Image 1 (cartoon, rainbow, N blue to C red):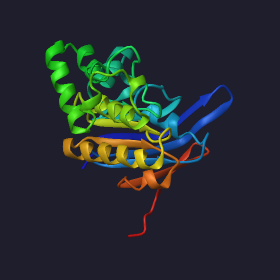
Image 2: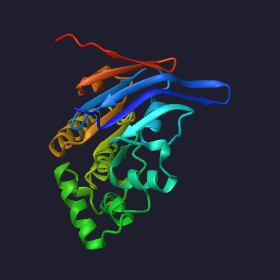
Image 3: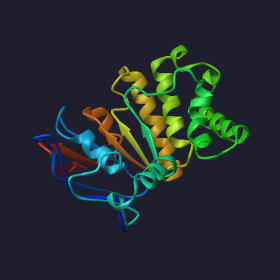
Amino acid sequence: MRPLLEAVDLRKSFGPTPALDGAGLAVHAGEVLAIMGPSGSGKSTLLHCLAGILQPDGGTVRYRDVELSALADGARSELRRTDFGFVFQFGQLVPELSCLENVALPLRLGGVKRKAAESRAREWLERLEVDGVADKRPGETSGGQAQRVAVARALVTGPKVVFADEPTGALDSLNGERVMQFLVTAARETNAAVVLVTHEARVAAYSDREVVVRDGKSREVERVR
């Protein structure tokens, strides 16, 4: 089976400092892949290249056999609205909008009418058991609730790949476990791949495979069964 998303020999520098030096990986539909490594190892840079947010200096990223670097900026932005979902460490919800409006936002940006967008958003809030905060603003919720709202926003468009960059980094262990359980369960039910950046072994344990990034290079970790 061909990978859904594949990176080969990625290289990326910021000024004289190399962030990626030949990193690569492959992700298949429906699997959860954890990218691990110490701070500054290049793991977040790798994720941003995979998502088409950053352009690598060398190497290739292919999504469904299309090379991302060959796409115009507008086409890459469109992919991030339709095929890719994102969960960040601090959620990055829009503070002026209600939680319901935050989840509906990607649909609204894609041209879905308000009523239909908010109906689908409410379904996802219910699915992640945070429908009780639908009318609240993010600042009126707990950290765990806000992060589940962010997961709902990432999944509401039916993405093929969800990129999660330290999604539990700002949460206590209990809320972190709940967020990971909801994220992985929902992704598996929709057959979405999850690319998960973390430095925590307990979070990586939710994945099917692990790739370690160190000094800009990557290697897959063999797990003991």
